Length: 310
Image (cartoon, rainbow, N blue to C red; front, top):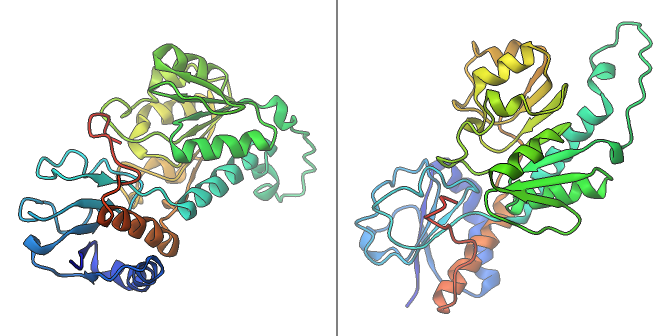
């Protein structure tokens, strides 16, 4: 039987994904009916974005899997009408984009580049930064993106500590877990990178108490999820000078409202959720590989653990 694949995302995304998905199907040797609109009872696979109009999965009685276009699944994982396997996006393009953004901003803070980029006022500011080997970096979150960034930073010479809720092992990275591990991970972090999923346990993880554990002048880089940080606590820590700078790519409300204090704060850099995006060409191959596996009766890749929320 020819599988029916529903593209359940915003209509403007169809123009971006249609040709890459059809090319990926052709490369995989799969004949399928790929469409924006199909009778729910005839859909076998759903390519899905959580901001789709589809929120009730009950009518999709033949559905085998939901294949998420995004790495984040916090807006779908709790949907009680979704009973079939849910796969999150794990894509080379998305991962590489995140590595490039994170290493770029970590190096920017490590080298103190803002003083020279923004300080073109005739003052000769000669300050020599430490070597990377003398600048401890902590990465909170050791999933695919966190591990990739931690390895890239370690490759540049930074001593990297990684923290995750459950124990992980990553070559050449000091891996910590649990509440005690989090305290140790924060206490050594001159630069802190947040790459955790958003769950009930991680919301406001970086609160006033934990911000106080960071070394004086620590830099924060958050391309993970906005609600990982207590915004009021961060602003207070920045105003007090305890946190040296925060580069933030994600926020509780996006786009970030023009009146939000982050925009005008001299120790905050706002970037408009650009740390990494799903790339249509590489993402299409990931999605179609899962369709291929489903049709062959093989286990799906990158499945979400509903009990953990990611």
